Image 1 (cartoon, rainbow, N blue to C red):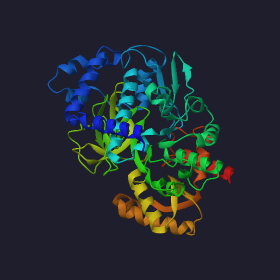
Image 2 (cartoon, one colour):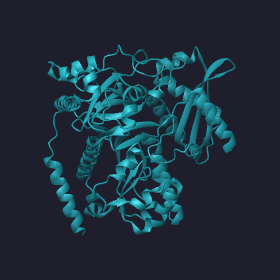
Image 3 (cartoon, rainbow, N blue to C red):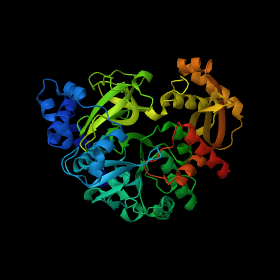
Image 4 (cartoon, rainbow, N blue to C red):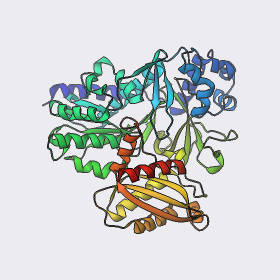
Length: 508
């Protein structure tokens, strides 16, 4: 019997039972008030009269009417550029010791300030998730195992008196001392910049570790596990890590990866979703009877929501200033919302680029439904990422094929618009591309009436091209974005598609 593990498990269960979970609406009012008060003497706070907002009868309403919406380009050019150059008290008191480099789907790197308050917020969110594991009936032996966190390199670069790297690397760099006993691959390996070499070292060291939990982006975790299996000549990952019980995913929908994950596991494990972005740790799964994530409403982030509709978005993808953003008290279930956040790192009414849907208002549980950039509406189709992913899932189920990645673009062909899809598949596909295209078209028509109308007018055809899933990962590597928080783009504009298709021609 794992005596120490059972003791740790009981201690976590006790801690989890006595955690005070505040009312989300009250918590959000308090979070906003505390942030406004702390930042009222910053340049941003003075410019937007935070003191007046705090003294108003309804600070939430006054905040929404006083502070404009910001996307990354606007807040960086107007405010964060000064922060990045080392100036103090701009959007948050003092100056940050870290900047998170966004390595998402856009070609331009983003520089996100990470304050000491945000580091504390990240740590508190991680502890909250750890405590929630007590609800999942794990054996005591699990609590004596180690956790393998596969993120970006912890070899951070010093610039203008601060350190910068991806948020996962910053998080690992700041791991508290009490957690280092459980953390793998350890500082030496995690500081290796070359992703392939880092994974090679993990594969070599794997037999020495007793891994009970994994954490990281699904596509990179899957590739890492395959390398461990290949190097150690295994049938599945449980042959080397028999106590592996939990995988903490994050940042993307896990479902497209489920089938391929099952093939490399010896038995089922618990999959937990989290929502960790470069701007903060926003939500985590807390219940075993739901795979939705709970917004962390009392942890240094204030949330607002704008319904995802064409009229609420400008042509450049930003939110129209005439739109009314909703507080957490005003949202409805089963509606897609553009997410806005204000944080203890000096992001204010910031359009993070994600869309969410509430599955339970009372428990403030959400699911990520996509990216605003992936709202495909070139010819009035009004397709959201959620609808695209849902159609792909149905396509996989109907044809028993494993599609782990996809991208789509609206392109001109013979002076008419078509949708061109690239599907990244595992294994051999017996269906031909034309049949797949017809099936996908039918599924999308059923899911979106606007798409159906567009197909009868300006959207003249649908094409599907099937490529190995590995093509997507090699493409990200070619763009120096392999590993970490990198996401494969679900929607490309014509310029991005041209670059992608040029790569495929060379790749093949």
